[in-house]
Amino acid sequence: EPEVTQTPSHQVTQMGQEVILRCVPISNHLYFYWYRQILGQKVEFLVSFYNNEISEKSEIFDDQFSVERPDGSNFTLKIRSTKLEDSAMYFCASSDEGNTEAFFGQGTRLTVV
Amino acid sequence: GEDVEQSLFLSVREGDSSVINCTYTDSSSTYLYWYKQEPGAGLQLLTYIFSNMDMKQDQRLTVLLNKKDKHLSLRIADTQTGDSAIYFCAEYGSSNTGKLIFGQGTTLQVKP
Picture (tube, each protein chain N blue to C red):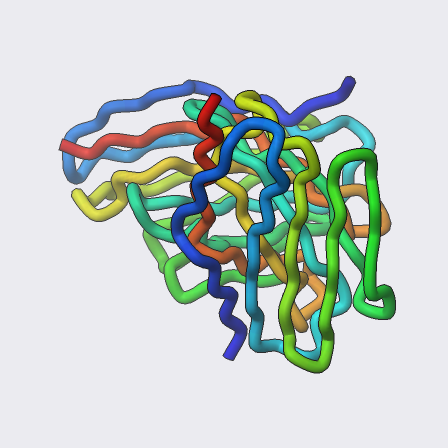
């Protein structure tokens, strides 16, 4: 069964460093998303991406965040200068043309120290 | 604004039925979802319901939607220990970009 895969599963980084979280969405999907879940809190929407551009972003998704689909298979989330409060589980998701069923990856746990 | 609320914890005995409840605020939501998260794993789409439906059944899972009260429930029949997980309710955002708004999750504990 096709699945969304994310790498790495766990990333530890120092405050102020740049991190790139990687995702391989399901191959025929057209919509891509990033969410995050701070420990003990809700899963929060960060950004949606369609047709090579951001279709919606949340207030969390400020200038420190960017997304890219560099090669037609990967979908990345970059955080330019990480802060302690960026520590969270980051989930990538994708959906097909109907855009009603989103399938999630297993997540990347980001720890900023 | 868009908001989804769930109770935090539910404990049942193996073999009993579990009912997990959710309320949402956006009456224009077209789809409502239930996701399951097992320890250390991602979010697994269990089922979803279109807003013009009252009920959807899928094997042991029954979803009930009361659109007037903006209330969604997930019933798991014959609950098994393998059903122990966190269950998230989510609504499809009104912006139609595919954004989902999640509740805080209900931890289901199934006792043998």
